[in-house]
Length: 262
Length: 232
Ligand SMILES: Nc1ncnc2c1ncn2[C@@H]1O[C@H](COP(=O)(O)OP(=O)(O)OP(=O)(O)O)[C@@H](O)[C@H]1O
Ligand SMILES: [Mg+2]
Image 1 (spheres, helix red, strand yellow):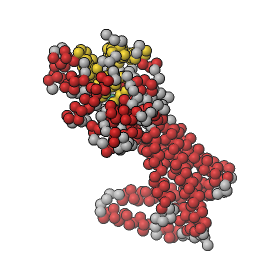
Image 2 (cartoon, protein in one colour):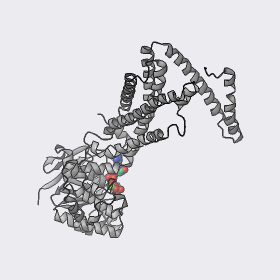
Image 3 (cartoon, helix red, strand yellow):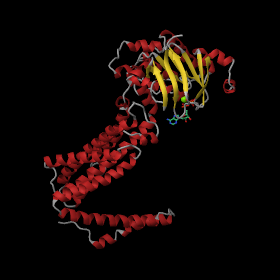
Image 4 (tube, chains in turn purple, yellow):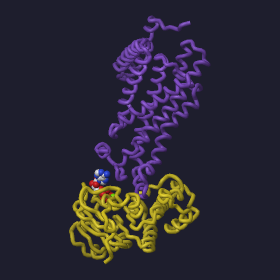
């Protein structure tokens, strides 16, 4: 049994758009244009991706997979870099981080036969890994910046007591990593209880046995968990040094961060 | 007079303009001046929390840049304006500096608490449960744990009330005396300066405009700026 949403039924999706549209009109939220535009844009985007995926799935996996994975990594890098523009080398660090994370996860999947080297499996699963890692890196960067600003007094105190930057940053690194990991631990704890994870829902709707769907979900959830941890760790460890100069002095302004040449 | 322990020659940066002065061993120097004059900026040059753009700073006859930076900072201890304690217990804070180089001796904990006149029972208290004055004592103990030769203080009592300030002054007075420390202290408070210091440096807009024994400075200020400052 192939489940299918017919084109006619798709048309009735308009009802779902009409609800917020009516609300916006009635309460004069002034969002009507936005709602219409984002619905159209979202629809077109998805269809385009659908066609691209069909095209990629037909390609030789040795071409299709590297091609799509690289594109995803580059886009994700640009996106995560926005959170740390004032830090030197943020782009390179994030790019390297994503390559490392995706590379090692993919290697594990293939080595233990959890995923087959087929575009239809590797690409969506990699998408989830890269997407989640991207968010984790962005969050870690933001968190690290705010921790450094908030704790500049403590950092100066630590340096004054003879601490090296890695020793002085210890506190901040722990806090950043904690903040990056806690939501993921929480998510793992309630998985399946509060909300059926997206991929599992998709597989079940697609007619896959729930237990089979759960196996896939386990693979992806745990993979995401470890990639997110690895990502946060990677950027934190790679970037904290840029908050100091080579004389173990704390850089205090964005300008100092940007202009230091190292 | 004794050897200069610090010597500033033509020291200049964005804020400070061509500073030339010596600090002598065991001297107690009070640095004061209006807000924004560059007092903290100047203090941070002594332990290389910042470096000047131009000029030369010597510590014990050698350019300050020749010292290994962590060793220099251990010898030239700094107490920041707000206490900036690390989360954890009093003990965690006291042993932070020495532990960094594996030189912590647990016996020292008691001695340090005694220096700053805190009861031994405070050892395992969490620092966020202490009063402002107690926190500042712990900070001072934490700085002393490295056995510095020079003690830099950036308005150590500005966040404290009058009574607590006096208690801290008492602790400082004794410590500096007992340990033969050289002290450079930033303060807004002339009464405090008179109590703890012997020489004054009056800083304004990044320039030292008076440098004299405190007594002379406060009774016979040479410049109109200092006169105004004293009157406030
Ligand atoms: N990190 C920094 N980057 C750029 N300018 C700074 C920095 N820190 C301080 N300044 C500026 O340098 C000047 C001197 O600051 P400093 O903190 O040394 O003054 P201060 O005499 O200690 O003042 P206060 O009594 O208020 O503590 C001020 O104009 C200040 O705005
Ligand atoms: Mg200051």
